[in-house]
Structure formats: structure tokens, C-alpha cells
Image 1 (cartoon, rainbow, N blue to C red):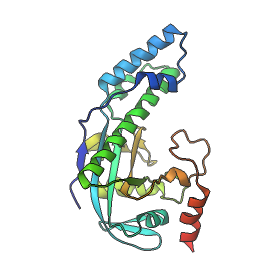
Image 2: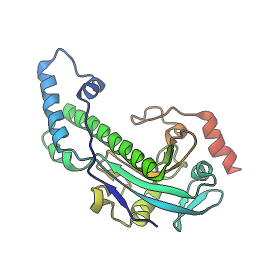
Image 3: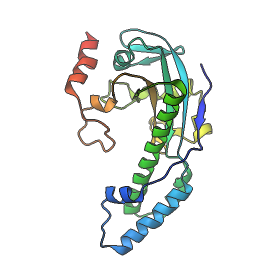
Image 4: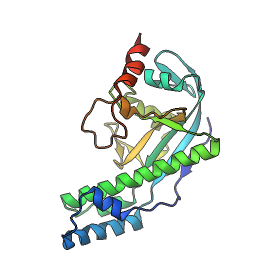
Length: 235
């Protein structure tokens, strides 16, 4: 297994116009806009989004399990998506812990604003992560999967412990500040973990998710893709 690569000092820039529009900040409320701008400036100053990844060999796969560096990951969908590829990149990315100091004293509306800003920080961390992996490894396109993303049996959330505890050797908190809670959720909440792999086509586990009201959906549900990955692969 290769060393863990940490990405913790890369350029980023929050887009004030885009973010204010996304939270429907009214143009005619100067006081509200001033409050939002004050919070935005603090976040832009404090934030340090981060990511880490580890290149891992795929030892072998059977009908419903991919064995990565001796660690079995249970997912029929992952077996289907990887095909004969023998390399994955385990990853974790986060908005960072630095802006958590701002939470005390925020009202509900301000909490909504800061979580939206953190979501954008996470997206920038994921974007930088993707660019680094593709550049360093001469990969044209990456697809990915995350435990708990998609329907429950796509890749169970319980597999999160294998990423944090075995693949990353319980070092994620030390290296980028992300903690795995007892309920298998990550803190800070605007964090993401999973595996990335070379692919000739776009794929996101959101395409295999029936939840209609997911705020973080990146792609619409694809019934045909779900049928191929879930039903055909189970026969």
C-alpha cells in the first residue's frame, strides 16, 4: 500500500455572487446582505479545505466483493464499475475545521449560510483532489463511490470503518481533522470519503439513489443503470 498523500495547502476562492444567489439573499435588504457579507469574509479568511488519498491495489474481486490491499469492500456495484481495473484511490476531503470556531452565537439563518459556504469549500477540495490524481497518474477521467451514498445496498455506510480504520490506519483525524462518529457520520459534516478509479464514462452513486429530496444530489436517478448494477449483477 502506498503512502497517504495529504493536500492541505491549495488555492481556493469562494464566489460571493454565486453563493449569495444560491441562498436567495434579497437585493433590497441591506442589513441582511451586510450580515451575510460579514460572515462570508470571515469564512474566506479562516477556511482551509483539505483532502487526502491513498493509491491502493485491487487484489481480486468476486461477485459482490472487491478486495483492496487485503481489505474486503462489499459492493456489487463497485465490482461492476471497476471491471478489470486493478487500482483505486481511497480518499477523504473536507471543508476543514477552521470555520467551526464561528458557530457559537450564529442564528438559524446564519447557520444555513455557513453550511452552504462549507459545502462549496468541500466541492473545491474534491475538485483539487480529482485534478491532482488525474495529473499525477495521467488519468483522463475519474469516477467514484462513497459508503452510504446511493441506495442502502449500493455500498453500505458500515464500510466507512474500513476506510478510516484500515486503509487510512486511523490517521484521518490527525492529518486533516475529520472524525468518524459512532453513527458513522463524519465531522465536520461537509466532508466526503470513498474511492476513486479511472473510468471511461461518468458515474456517481447518486444515479443509484431513490431519495428524491437529497440536497447534495449530483446526478439524477438512472433507472436503467440501477437495473444493470443491482439486478443483473445479483443473478
